[in-house]
Amino acid sequence: MPRVGLAPPTEYHHRCRRQMIRRARRWAMPTLRPRKQRVKPKLDDIRRREICAILAVGGTRTLAASYVGCHVETIRNTASRDPDFALQLRKAEISPEIAYLRSLQTAAQDSKQWRAAAWALERLFPDRYGPRKAQAITISQMTEILNALGTIVADEVPVKKYRQRVLERLAELIADLPKPKAKSRPRRAS
Image (cartoon, rainbow, N blue to C red; front, top):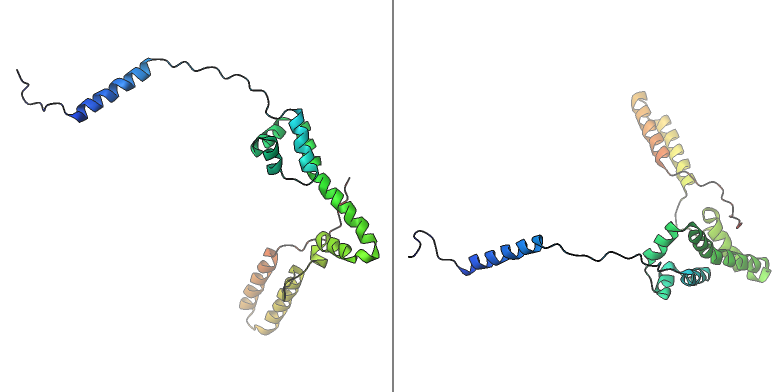
């Protein structure tokens, strides 16, 4: 005898029923996942030495990671876990810079190599010897200009209330300027 008032089951009903059965089976059966075994470190002593050697000749961490077959993050994570390796990395990354400075200093002492001395001065003291764009002004020059403008305003604006407001705003502008760098000295490698 047919059911009265109910629509016959369609493909949609069958699909929903199959999905419900699959989900019930999935939740009912416990999945056995294998335990994670402790993985031996990806960066053994040989790879660590290779990474430091690449960095010591001026290579990047990306290049070193590619060479030893790991990711840059692996190097960073290993260094964060192992302070000795972090120290080795830091020394290896700094050593090419020290070597270049030594050779530059040697070249600059020869009078025929004046370009090396000029290059070193530009890099070590950029505020004094560095190249400037046409009509560029320094921070100290800008401060002098604003102070001169303040003097002009003080002389020319007759109403004290307005003059005071303008001078306060100029003082704020001067305070917001970046501070000029102190006369820098070359850093010595220790």
